[in-house]
Length: 137
Image (cartoon, rainbow, N blue to C red; front, side, top):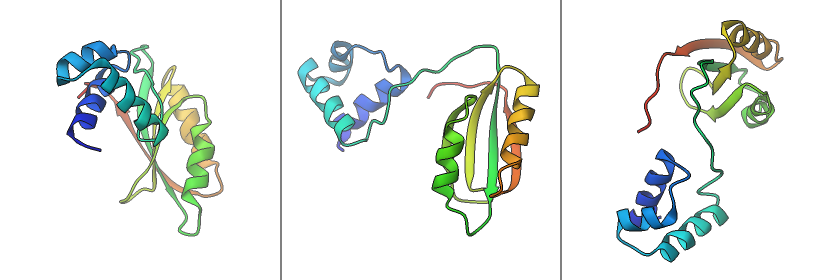
């Protein structure tokens, strides 16, 4: 990846629907170059998916999950990623092993998700943080 790739990614992170012509004008290249670079980054799994950010009025939270030391964290993460309320799953270093970003209809939905996580055999701890506001970088 070079600086041009990073500039293109930065614009797509802010708005994945930005037309390639607009990106090209902003970064000083052609639309075809932007299209080719995006396709290459998709082929190389640098861009995994295009997604949206929502302001649904729902309760958003970060749920930090600790798992036992002998557990396959990737397998647990993949299973949890399938849960309907989960937007993102990150395997992280530090005190906890997995961080979930969840979007639930209300605090009861967040609490149900915490209970669901705690019911997983591999999970040894959880910590929850409600997201009060978010800004796109």
